Image 1 (cartoon, rainbow, N blue to C red):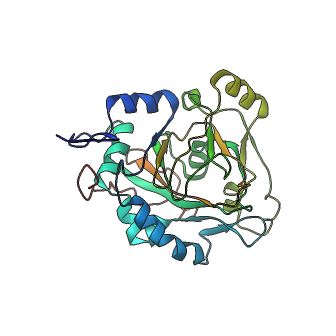
Image 2 (cartoon, rainbow, N blue to C red):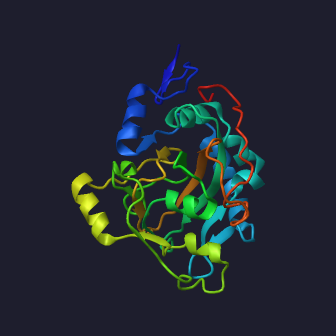
Length: 286
């Protein structure tokens, strides 16, 4: 039986060690080095990125300047190569380990781009509230998987977490009314995708939790894989550096946690086909 950075690669239950699983459940996130789950994650995603960023349409969201790409959604539906990445055996195995062995599908996929000097912030928030209110997902039985397509440093807008807050449930938040500045003519669902979060956690709550638990910004080279809980409190600052910070993100959902509301948001934001993914490749991702 062979071993790799992510754990026991020959273990049919998944590649993560019990220690890594415990760390995820304690902190609400887990950062793995490049190549831990599938060696081709970075190459396939990077090769698709230029085409992804130039595709005009409603799935592409711009920054408030109207020129800079902020995000592109629904990539697992529109790009076969990226769809294949979501089914890599080691990656899928790790996801199932962290979701108590449940079969899963991709509820949402996207690339978040923080362009040099222009990539805007994401305010403090939790993810699950959007999937609860927008799609009717009854439980937070989801997992975010982020693949670093660039090196992530303290300067180019890394994600910042308050560890352990995924166990606090839904936090007190403010539902911002109306459309954010610069998006006044956009469809209503765009309000959930901009720098001005629709469901904002109150500053007093953020301060209390940050004082109690601290704050962490996972950083690492391109190809690193960050897994995090949909209820962990997090944000990311604007990219003040001359270097890009792109992340490919898959949101896996348990097939037993199907949306109770369909058609409210476009399919590229909430996949209506909750069909269990079948793995491809070997459990070691090699």
